[in-house]
Length: 75
Image 1 (cartoon, rainbow, N blue to C red):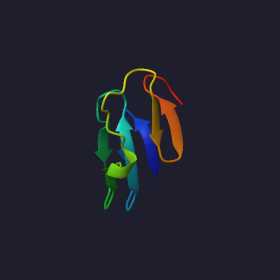
Image 2 (image 1 turned 90 degrees about the vertical axis):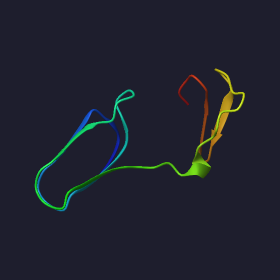
Image 3 (image 1 turned 45 degrees about the vertical axis):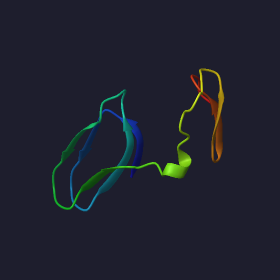
Image 4 (image 1 turned 90 degrees about the horizontal axis):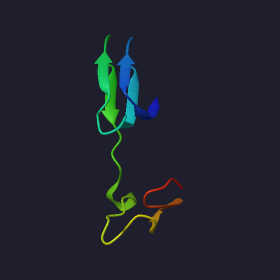
């Protein structure tokens, strides 16, 4: 299972796998695992998908492969 953003992840049972992208706000999610062989990992963004800010300001266009958007607002 993949999760975009969450405050908490609770995994029970056995041999489950959860990958999360980010927590809610600046915090990482609270994670609890019960059972056996349960895995909870954070998805890592590949360096080629991250645009490093140089002199970007609010409202400047940004480019991520497959997506377009603007600094400071949703695409």
